[in-house]
Length: 230
Image (cartoon, rainbow, N blue to C red):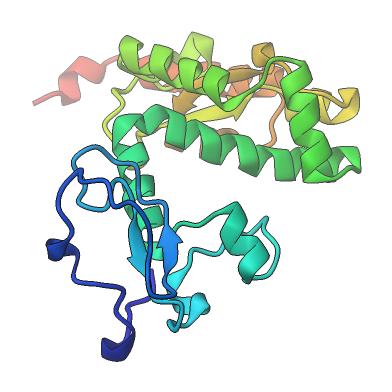
């Protein structure tokens, strides 16, 4: 979020009482509806001077019309309160936040495959039950299991612990989804980022062959190997 110049600060937030309802903005001020975050001192709204630069003060939604009176009436939330709300949502449900990023990102990818707009791809997702909430349930199920699936289920078996071992969603057979023209929940499973990156656009059969080969390499014990063990 862009820092405000000294002459365009919104207000001293320490002067706004926690959870106190302010009835209305006065003296020509605009009104921010607040963050809505319990306990935040701007939870229930605050006035913002109409003289402040709207490009700096007001949150700009990428799907909204240009900033102006019409925009402010549709989404009257300042940048500060918008960021507080986003941070709070991220803390409330990490898996849902991750699922939303996955959902929007893969809608862009599938739109290119199917020759449609990302919006249409999202509509096709929803028709087949692929929503941020259902993707989040896949992530939660994987987290409850505690580790990436073992090699015979398309993973490495290592514990999820963030970074390259963080949970992500994988489309099992991208080629089939691309040709079919729609995506279902059965096409998706949870695995670690490392396995997802290694798999790439492989078909599921090719990936399982790859996993089986590496498992065999790790388990193989050539004759006389005991002699070289310290």
